[in-house]
Length: 399
Image (tube, rainbow, N blue to C red):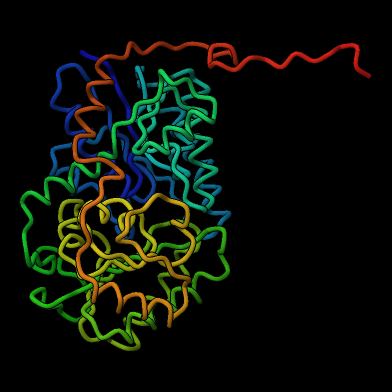
């Protein structure tokens, strides 16, 4: 048996970010992969990952039920605590050589903390990025508890170095989700219709006509205003007279308020040309996005994968405010008139040139090559001198 790696999957978006790496590891005789399903990945309302993983041939070794419902900040904090307890037990029994984790979610931090206290090395993807939300705290804390860093961009590499991580542990590989985007771009399926396979709820959308994709997630740090902000987005989209594929939000604090605003719109107004979905498989979702006239909302897909496709994006609010983005993105406050005008302008502009901020489609092979070369050891934290920081010498005579 080769190197044993353990990963925790908790959301549909997280899986899309790491899918190509997991499939590559499963195919390689050098590795043994253990997959743990947890959190929203086991819940239908947030995109149950079990059928997706089964279709991809990814074996699930453990399923954990630890998501507290309620969509409140305290529920999110308590879920993190439950996951820390359960993840600690899984890691203790696994005899893993290392963990592989991605992103900036509270679940990732729980897994990293559980591994750190058991002295199990952590390989973290997508560190060093900055968004402008509470995720920044989680991401940077995860970086400090990780041992090997697979970053997506040049700026991210600089930020991880500035946090005190040794340059020899940082690898700029690009983002693995761009690998999926690159494959879709090479074999783009025009007029892809998710309604045929996934159904959805609401009016049927004619994919031969221009359409937009909308996905708006809650902002935990602005918990009280999530309903009001979502209503502004709903009103802007409703007045834009365009076909819409609308996706439900993730499970962060405030999700109940976002969902309430969307549900009221769907049920009270029965809007024409609007179809609602919980989840699509990564390739299908990115195919839909690649053919869209515009993507609207605050999902990182609008910043990351859409930059590769050149799909016009209206980025709403502060959730992605400081993330690196291409010229295809227009940023607006969550105000009805601002969103409506930006959407009109972006649809008129049409497709942008591709940009390769987050990679060109070769991340997974680079990551697997690095993982193959690493001899994982459980070792003590590095001293300032080992990192390259000279300790400050204070004058003991000073008073």
